[in-house]
Amino acid sequence: MNARMKYEKLEKVGEGTYGTVFKARNRESHDVVALKRVRLDDEDEGIPSSALREIALLKQLRHKNIVQLLDVLHNEKKLTLVFEYCDQDLKKYFDSLNGSIESKIVRSLFYQLLSGLAYCHLKNVLHRDLKPQNILISKNGEVKLADFGLARAFGIPVRCYSAEVVTLWYRPPDVLFGSKLYNTSIDCWSAGCIFAEIANAGRPLFPGSDVEDELKRIVKLLGTPTEAIWPGMNLLPEYKPLPEYQPGDFGVAVPTLNDSGIELLQRFLICNPAKRISAAMALKHQFFTENDDDLNLASL
Amino acid sequence: MAGNFWLSSHFQQWLFDRQDLIRERQEDYQVLTEEEYQKVMIFFANVMQAIGEPLKMKQQVIATATIYFKRFYIRNSLSSVDPLLMAPTCLFLASKVDEFGVQSNNRFIEVCRNVVKTKFGYAFQQEFQYRMPNIFECEFYLLEMMDCCLIVFHPYRPLVQFCQELGTSLDKKDQHQQDLILQTAWKTINDTLRTDICLLYPPYLVALACMQVACIILGKDFKQWFAELSVDIDKCVEVVKLILNLYDMWKTFDEKKEIPALLAKIPKPKSSPR
Image 1 (cartoon, rainbow over the protein chains, first blue to last red):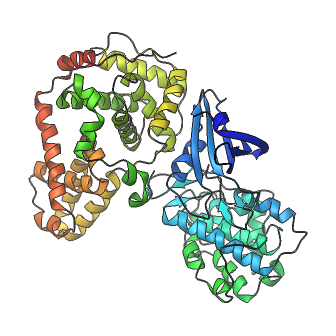
Image 2: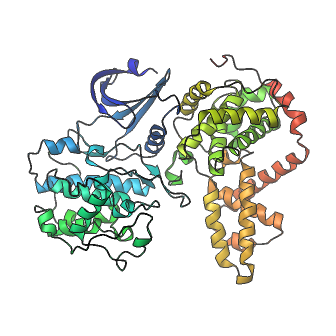
Image 3: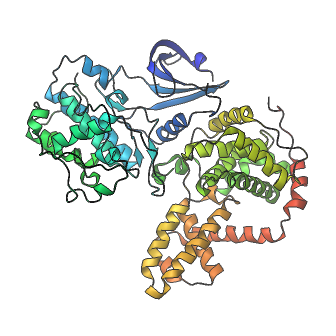
């Protein structure tokens, strides 16, 4: 079926990794959806591999904290992915905050983010590109992970993953040092950075300008890692010795987080990827259990 | 690509029983016998293998493409889309999905043309005439017919795991047998792609059956080890039988002699490529 016959386009919402995104309405059910038109103008590739990967993976994922792929429509050289619609992404939400956020909302947003991530990891899918722009928030305060164009299923430990995939600010030190065999820990680092950014009402934690600056910002807060706490570090392909820093003060970096929040953040922001907490473990952390509010919806 | 098999579309949508296959292929079975159909499938699996190798595609990618091909022709008759166009299209799609990376299109078409001409000239009256726009168009169709289920699981990975487990149960002096079995069973998995096995049984079971076939070929006896696995031995035996049937058929299958006549039996697609 033709996309135009089935959906009425309402407005352009943005540009995705591989095409324009429109808000649209199903002519029959009146449901509002997001249409992601896949550009096929690149005569060399046919359907772009990023779109194919997103389709392949989302086809395997169904969870309330992951954006749902409702339909794939094709006609005459055009491919349209139909997603459930969300009003805004985390980035836009930050812009609306004016610098402060309730701790209850911090807990709920991060809890939902981790729920979606734990499910991906259970299904053996890495997101690889978590950032506020890829985290959607629905009208009623539900968090949805989106944009799986760089995601991949993992489990075959035979090949290097393609380099240069994560936006610099959310990129873990092991990847910054050129490690190419990464796993779920890559997403957990990004989640930690986003946790701090949520708590700080949208101020990014490590907004580095290049790889060197990014690493420097990281070790200024975490302290410079040693071979003893991160065995194998100096064997990584792009390892360079870093200036010596003592650990900084997390209370200054994220002043609004309580003790358990800071403890949880520190379990994510660990240079040695093997030591980073998993999303599933983090969901059971005291930070989430010490209050008995409903964490599954954020009352924005 | 990997992932969790039991939660996958492969398990949920793309495993059949024999009756399903017979029903789905009814149209083709009007012009071809079951055995002839299998021979046509073997032939095109060989075409895909022959195109994939000079392009240095990994065996995994070729295996995925072969399964796409089979899945497409479960849902469609062989006369719906020219299999000679579908075969390279499956390779093209699989190489993108498995992150093999996209090749130069010119090279891709050139290899298709060369392989068809030099290796399979006996089967086709004409040269390979398709171009990238035909492949792109066919890719759409393939994606739609497969209901966008692109992730395919193969027996290679479970095989490696099983062989490691077998290895730990062996005496030190027998350790090299583990490698022998791995190599032989790996080739046997490649052979299963010439059958319906991948449409009928989950990959772990195929891996075990291929290990058993390897034991038969190598004259080894690990009955004890197999017996201690908690798997459905009857199902495993079914797969072994299907593999042995294939080997029986192979002994008398003369592709060069039989294939031209079989391809001639398949009605030509109604719409020719634009």
